Amino acid sequence: MGVTQWWRRLTGKGGRGTDTDPATVRTAGPRSTGVSQPTGRPGRRPQPDASLPVMGVDACKAGWVGAVLDASGHGTPHLLVRPTVAELVAEAGPLAVVAVHVPMGLPDETRREADVQTRRFLGAGGTSVFSTPVREAVYAPSFGRANQLNRERVGSGVSQQAYGLRSRILEVDAWLRQDLPFAVCEVNPEASFAQLAGGPLESRKRSAQGAEERRRVLAGGGVVVPGTHPVGAGVDDVIDACAAAWSAHRVKAGQARTFPESPETFSDGIPAAIHV
Image (cartoon, rainbow, N blue to C red; front, side):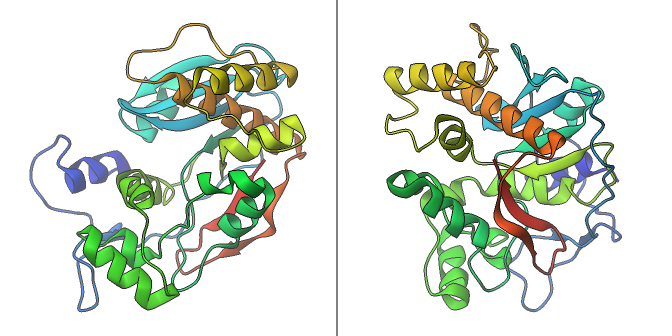
């Protein structure tokens, strides 16, 4: 069973039956939180091909929005919206790097340094970076159970924002278990904007002023946000995807900063670091 099919069956978004591939997903065990987890190790990734474009990805109402940026790292990205990440990258064609605004590499019983250091980098704007729940909390069947598990592991509960992103984390956690023809990295758009602007932005991203400021900052970095947006993606989603694409190009060029400098690795084997 492919990862997309696994995701649809887990969430009930299409497909029939409830069987799963035992090579990919384990059945809930004695300490399980009630949701099956993929057990495969991270798939293989090639070194980025400098001749190929990159894509920045952000969650949106319709699923995911992708901003495909020319191999030069400049210009107006081409926008795509699809219900799953797998469908999005398939539609995009050959890519060097895919940068996604979602946690990759779930901690077992600690806080992620990626979140801690990115929040510190953003200063007062660090509230946009939530603490990634531990793996068992992400797979918990309810918000209450997730809170309980996270408190047991790290001494604090789970934010509504973090639990609200749960379905996206689950999808990407499964997607990363296959070989992919491009590099994949985690980004935080507000950190990308701060890197571009030389400091954190103070405007709210969902305000008209915030959107305009972020467009100007991206334009200063050679990325022009498209004037029209696809159905199912908000203005802020599109702008964030474009910022993610800017960071993806920096990853391809070997210019990106990472928080932390050396990615952490937890039991899932997925390197955990935010790239700007």
